[in-house]
Image 1 (cartoon, rainbow, N blue to C red):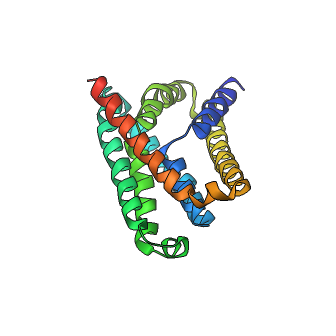
Image 2 (spheres, rainbow, N blue to C red):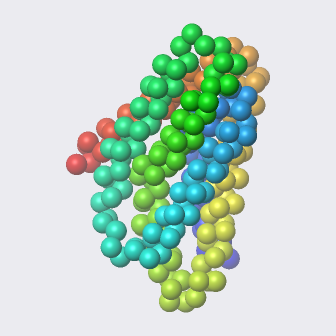
Length: 204
């Protein structure tokens, strides 16, 4: 029960904390593409976390501890590049034209996956929290640590979808804001990307 509550609590905090994935998904909601927004918010990180679970499981002791700091540069650059591309692509286009753009659709999913890989929080979680818990499972049996990962999954994705729905609902109540939701989401992406780069530079 302790591991279940710990996993659920950490998952909820991670799901509520604004991230590039939230902003990319919110931009898709602004285009009335809820299915793609959920693919960005759930599908991409689920795939990446599955790969990182295997990497942590087999190679935990070989992964350098400073990798979380190193990927901040990559993550910040990717996030800012996608936000800039998205803003340039939207110039002079209606919301309907943006929604029908295959280039934007593929770019948003690709950016979501790269943002997840490049987010320092992803590596911090797997190396400092999930890794030691997996090591504990190796000693005490993996069924012992299943509640932690189950709680993390339910907490994170439940909170992430709930926060996205709340943001979309709030935007729907204020029509002028909804009109600029796509622009706002991408400007926030630029800010998030810049914060990654600044934090990486200051933490050299």
